[in-house]
Every structure is written in structure tokens, then in C-alpha cells.
Amino acid sequence: MLGVVIATAERSRLYYRFGSSPCFPVAAAPDRSVHRAYGLPAFVRTPEIMAQSAGYNLIDRQGVMRWASAGELLHELPRPESLLALV
Image (cartoon, rainbow, N blue to C red; front, side, top):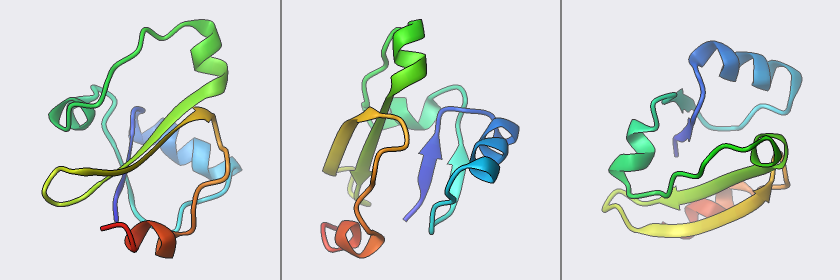
């Protein structure tokens, strides 16, 4: 499992330094190239979205989206074993 964030590596490190760290590796793609490659939607970043919203997607090796969630930043994510059972 690999997480991909829309942020620079430096910003991601700072974010996880003060928040809870994931139990899987995270890559940074500030240009959204990975997200575009999988056809994930891009949203216009308004102040409201910047402050409250995040999207989470689990995509398998064949490019099939197995799980998705959108909502508040830092909401409770399923346990890794629950996500792995989907792929």
C-alpha cells in the first residue's frame, strides 16, 4: 500500500510530524500527476475546501478503485488490514 498526497515532500513531512503518521509509505505528487493518471477528479481549491476537505481512494494494481471516501481532513481511516482485504 502506498499513499500519495497532493503536496510537496517538505509539506508532507511537516504535516505528518505534527499529526498521526500512516502505517504505510507516502509519496508526494504536488502536480497531481498520479491522481490524474488514475482519473481522480480535481477540484477548484477554495478557502472552504482547503480548510475542511480531503479525499481518500484505494486503487488496486489494475487501476480499479476499491474504496473511496471524501470529507473532513484527518478523519478516521479504516485499518490497513480492512483496506488490504479489498484488494
